[in-house]
Each structure stands twice: as C-alpha cells, then as structure tokens.
Length: 358
Ligand SMILES: Cc1ncc(COP(=O)(O)O)c(C=O)c1O
Image (cartoon, rainbow, N blue to C red; front, side, top):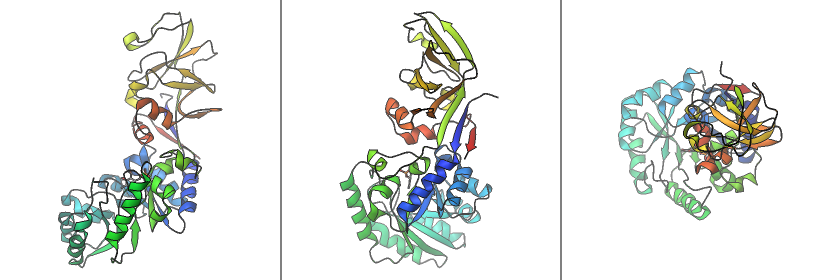
C-alpha cells in the first residue's frame, strides 16, 4: 500500500485534554470533535478525550453525532447548530443534545413527543447562528410552554477571543446581562482561546477544539499552556533521480535547479490535502533536515530537492510534524498559505489513512 499516512498521537490528545481539565477545574471540559475531530478521526479522539476526563463532546452536524453513536460513544454529545427541523426525531433517536435558537426548531422538537435537554444559544456578536439577546425571553417562554422541553444550558460563542480582548469582554458582559435571572443548570461561552485567556468565561464548561489537537490559537495561549501537536503527516521516498543544473521538475516546469541535485519523489499530493499552493514554499523533512520542494505539487506526488544528501527510496519523509530535531508545524503551513492551522488539519483528506499511536 502507499506509504503515506497521518500519524495521530493519542498520547498527545490525552495530554492536551488533561492540560485543559486542570486549567478549567472545577469547570468541565467539552471536547469539540466536529469535522472528524479536526481531521484527526472522531471516534478514537472521542474515546481518548473521555478517558482523560472530558465530560461531553460537541459536533457541528447531526450526521457527526450519529457517527459517534454508531461507534458506540455514549457520552453526552452537543450538536452546535440546529439541524433541519424535519430531522428533529433523529436527534431524539440518537440521544443527542440539541442546540436551539429558533421557535421553529423548538416546535419541531416538541412535536416529537420526546423529552429533551436543550442548550439555548444566544448570539452576542458572532452573528452566525443564535437567538439575539432581545429575543431570548420569547424563546424561553416558547420552550417553557412545552412540558417535554427543559433548558439545560444557555451559551454563546466568541469570534475573536484570540484577537480582540475588548470585544470579547463586552460579549461576556452582554451574555451575563442577557441571561441574568434565568436559573439554568449550565452556562458556557469559551472556545480554546476563550478558555485560556478569559478565566471569567470558563463558567460551567468550555468547548475546546483546537487545543485538544495541540494547536494554539495565538502566541498568547502558547505562553500559558504547553500542548503537544497530535498530527504528523508521514510518507516515504518512492523514487530518486539525479538531475542536472537547469532541470525543471514537475508540471509547469516552474523552477530550474541551480545545481546538479538529487530529487526525491514522495507519494502525496493535493488530492490528499497537501496544497498545491505550497509548491513555492513547501518543505519536507528527511533524515531530520528540511528540504525545499523542487517544483509544483501534483495530485498524487511531490518532488523534493535534497541536493547532495544521501537519500534513498524508502526513507521517511515528514511533511507536517516533527522528525528528529526539526519540525514543520500546522502554523508554518498556515503562514505560507495565508490561512489558519484549523484549515490545515481539517484539510487532510480521506485518502490519507489515519494511524493511531500512543
Ligand atoms: C460553537 C463552537 N464552539 C467551540 C468551538 C471550538 O473552537 P476552538 O477550536 O477554537 O476551540 C467551535 C469551533 O469552531 C464552535 O463552532
């Protein structure tokens, strides 16, 4: 089989979960495992997270919650957005915890005749989904009219906890003012940056995604907690050529080798989530040394300029993560691509098998 895989270090996941458990105590930790646990594999991450002290999980989609139930994960699972009201019965069937913010979805849940613990989402500034603070009273009365529905939590979400402390503090204040007077079992606000940087936002629990995977939202969080990245992208040299100065490997012939050089072909490409836009700045670690790409990233393969190094077919190549004393981080990719580390790990495609190590 192709010697390319994503190595997922469950020991790192456990370590990161324990770090957040300690940071948050006595508040609880909800680990966000949407998007296949940010590309790390939802069921194995969920199991490691629960073993290490998380008390609940969160997903974006009903389908993601169902996948976890099918994998026999029995923990509480919060669905972070309302699904289609026609699927309300599925929420009940799979024992998921729904987020609500519209009367239409509240009615759909009520019509199932099943009892639900609801997490009501208030929009304090993200402006993606949620009930506006001015609409909370009416929504709470609609819920209160249904004996099968109980509000288990009020919550909100931060758009810039890693970038704008003033805005985030104003959101926290608005949220606290909005929920004042409602007696609910749980209140939650914080994502990773919120949990680390705003102790007053920890409340009943924090919903931690990025940090679980050992990634930091910014440098400030890096100075507070020590996390371990959980994903390495590993491949092996599949072909070696010695090429003369002036050769232009790969599609587009975008760059000429400045010297005679050894070029290693590595079987990973943009169909795997190794972005074509790394053709200029991408590097690969071989024998603990970083080497530049020698040309355009193709769908299934890249070419690496290893100069005069003694590299052979079968040698390990690390595209993301640590090898020896060198490391290529998701933040390095993100900087080169003008994006964030979230998109990097989520972008590693299903063609790359996940291999779990402890
Ligand atoms: C509603 C909600 N809560 C929590 C999170 C987790 O955020 P982070 O990965 O920054 O911890 C997300 C992820 O985007 C989210 O959408």
